[in-house]
View (cartoon, helix red, strand yellow):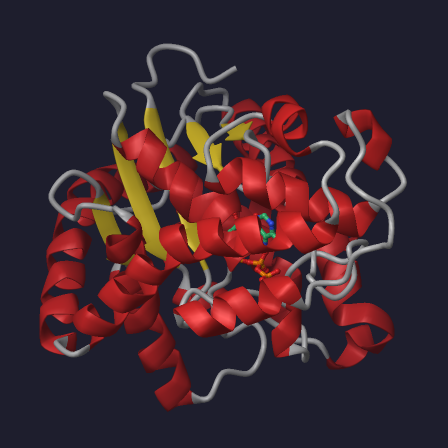
Length: 338
Ligand code: AQP
């Protein structure tokens, strides 16, 4: 457990790889805002160095990084309350990642589901960075001695690896220097599924735009995508358990619950027995009500990219006040001459 002497500190990140979507919002962004509003220090990050583990067009990467920053702010992250940064502007992430490349074992990395899914049968052609991704992620978290990381369910394995890396470092050097960070995976939408296939995660890289709601979609597009979401012919059951073998229907109920900040049992009590002809328009209205103001605010913020750059520069300065001493101490523990 991440116990004293570690002060509670929350860190999490999102890749600026375009197509920021409803899954990123419900599984991550919206929960970041909840954390910010508690009495705890919060650091949120655009992880551009993670994004380049697969090819990114340079102009698109710069655009997506600013757009993601706009997404954080439009969703409710206040850069005065939270430290908002772009990963490559805080070089200590990469510096600690190298140390962790030397702590993590090849076998650990090879077992990562994301590596297996993304590299697939073509692992020989995958970048070395894609393989080392979880060590960089451990560095992102531990360079701030972060104790809690809110993420979607797909990132659980990487946080467990972060704990393994911290424990091995502490053990090898006989210190209690890095905390054993807790993953925080909570809420009704820890795994938002594709609107076209309820057995597949909603994802930035799905070639079908209809599979996801993008945070930049306007009200009409959001409503249309929900109306066309895949469902089955049955009405909604009376209880959540009745959705066990109905992944598409369950996904829409989870989205409804998460967007309305209610638990799923509550939603079933209200909507059980409804046909999709009734439920989908209600969900579409709710999604438009919650998401359209965010996409409008993102568009407004994107009209002043200079201001976004200034916010990120200030964030980097604040972040480095924490990360630089932790890196220095890491080097000292290892025996690197300073
Ligand atoms: N479908 C999802 N449901 C709930 N949470 C999700 N997250 C991602 N997809 C869902 C959470 O969003 C945060 C940032 O994710 P990321 O951008 O760093 O990486 P990702 O998981 O690789 O995003 P994608 O959309 O799945 O990208 P591709 O298509 O490239 O694989 C994380 O907290 C993640 O859990």
